[in-house]
Image (cartoon, rainbow over all chains, first blue to last red; front, side, top):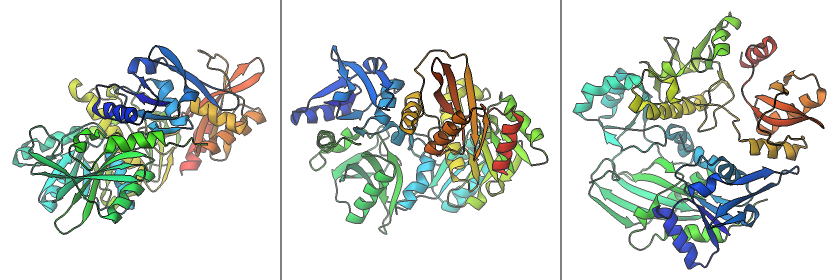
Amino acid sequence: MILLWGSLGDGPLARVAAALDDLACRMCLVDEEDARRTELAVAEDGALRGSIPAGGRRIDLAEVTAAYLRPRDPRADALWAWADLAGVTVVNRPAAMSRCFSKAQQLPVIASSGFAVPDTLITTDPRAALEFWDRHGAVIYKSISSTRSIVSRLTADHRQRLDDIRWCPTQFQELVPGVDHRVHVVGERTFCSVIRSSADDYRAAGAAVAVESGELPEPCAQRCRMLARQLGLLFAGIDLRVTPDGRWYCFEVNPSPAFAYYERGPGNPIAAAVAALLRDAPRES
Amino acid sequence: MLVVVAGAQDVGARRLPERWAPHDVAVLTPADLATVGWRWRPAAPEQSAAVLDGRLVALTDISGVLVRLPAVTPRELPQISAAERDYVAAEMTAFLVAVLGSLDCVVLNPPASPFLTSPLWRRERWMRAAARLGIPTAGPASRHTDVSAVTVVGDRCFGAREGELRRQSRLLARACGAAMVVARFVATPVGRRLAGADPWADLEDDDVAAALLAHLA
């Protein structure tokens, strides 16, 4: 039995559910309310025992062989705890997803995987931000936490407002020119999308974007797999950019990628790969 | 310099600079993060600086850190407009997680994202770790009134006199890889059993405070 935690209104979860259906896998969908009614206990021998309501009945968590988590509100503590501890394949473990909470903390891990990372300054000092801007000529700013933010380029307008950073540490990075690649790692498989856009952040509303399947050089694919492994992620969305002189930069790793956008067109059957990963998941000891 | 990361209302942490004199000790509260002067460059640690008690301090001058705060919460940021408080709290937490994780000195205890310290495990995880170590555990009673705490700091143990509880606490600290852990045991009809653990040592305890200083300095 494969547990899906989330809502069918969520694109990625709906696609994985459909792909599991195609594979004739048994699954149970657990919504936010069901999740809050999880019962979980740790036996004297350390074994986890519990059950969860789904589809009008209670399911013994021992029946679950794998799980895909896309909760909007993960405050259902017992199920969140089970997902970290259960000896089954979980895409992805809460602890591993939490490890990606700080983009700034990801940077050294990314660098250790062999990718270039943009020069970064986090500061509350307007003067330091100006020096950094002058040094690089073109600079972007973005959130430090996993809070969704649009990557924006510093412009002349920002000069007037730079004093505002005194209230909150703000992350600045050198602007790296090049072509965006989004790589999804699913177990040992990688799927690459090439994104062509003139926007600073192609995900911003209104940006003109062309997305197509792409080929990733094998050394890059290896680095992506290694990076996901280092972060403990079975499924990851990795943001890369290749510069005109062929240098590969990595900006961040998304531990719960909303991949539907990148499945347009052939060559990137990501949901099917996630479904196969869940179906073939071995039980862990 | 030693740094104590704490909430503004943490009285025990506020007293540490005096208690640990003549060591140079600064208390870092969330308000300090909304102060001009912070600079953090992962590629150039020598150019990175913090603002502590109004002083600009090179991160390389920090020799030890005690963390008393799980995360920066919106409640700690009254100076930030209400609409921005949640976002700013998350940003400050993510920033501190990265900074504390990058320091080349003793941090009690190091951050475990998304928290500023560790181990902040859910009850089930403690219970499972304990069961695997052969440590008897208590059921999830709603309220325990008779709690005995054992604080482990490095190789030293404080609190309960029972040797067995101290042995179990050391085992637990070793298993979770933390230099500082407070194991909490509750009284049950069959003896004391582990109810949980956390990194919140009692700073009002002279022996504990001295051991923390010895470990950091």
